[in-house]
Length: 389
Ligand code: GLA
Image 1 (tube, rainbow, N blue to C red):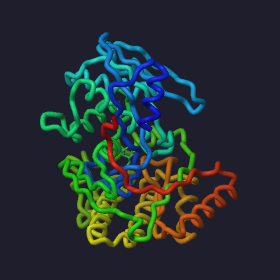
Image 2: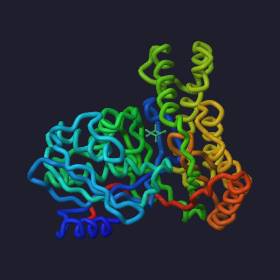
Image 3: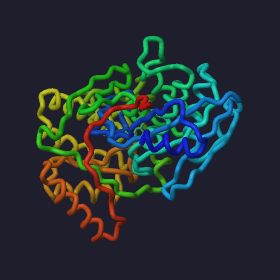
């Protein structure tokens, strides 16, 4: 992807970019809708990335070009970075612009020409937009002379919070910290155990191939129109529950105290709270298995997580349930939807030699129901964001 972005930059501007930075999409192994409740998540980075080839401009303007599937460049801007404000840019260009807006406020204010190329499936719930934001952040910081991981540079956690701020306040979606942190901080062959409240991170080994296993990603190609409002409503419900309980966040409810807590809440909030509390517990148990190299033992936790999202959090949909149920019927050790829900992707933990048969069964199940054919690929935990050239 880095070479592709650099070549596109060269063909547009007739010179090499100053550098190329890239960031991956992610799947979340488990720990869904826990991030904005100050809880635990466990993502890994995909082997698919968005690369940003970049050069500085001296006029304080930002121009971003992406190359579409048809090979035709599409340019947004140039816009004056100092004039950016929430609502001033819409569509895909809001993502890189929002990052420039936050970095400007943080004192990194140079203009830039950016050319974007990537292979993270778009609209699949695999965080292609976060990969774009993270790669943009690193590119703009890099042009400002800030090299990631150097002693005086803002660390990856800080950059993740800036990216979240741009998404919440500029793009206008109230998402948590899961996706940016995954894209910035994941490492090869590990899942990232993040405690969102403390910011503490542990890289937990997750080498599926040495265990004879694989993670099959099933992109259902579904995106239901109420995805954004559904997300907002769930988040607002969790915040309402925490405020009724007089606690900072649902993270503070333990599984042992759950029954009493549920009894003190209105009916409509109980399933939400039950999901968040049990999901945090499932993340912790999954991590315990992985620390002890018991990868196969996490299957039931993945499947229980899906049931909790389907029945309590109510964010699954026909396509996700067909993907999960069929994968399980076909022998997967565990399966669940991943990401925000209402469409997007599911993951299934399968024996390496069953990847093909499970995939074929899922394809057949989608075809039998007249659903759009799903996208299928296996994913190994891959490196997080960084500079390529
Ligand atoms: C989306 C959001 C994340 C997180 C997940 C659900 O991916 O961007 O912050 O809330 O949904 O776990």
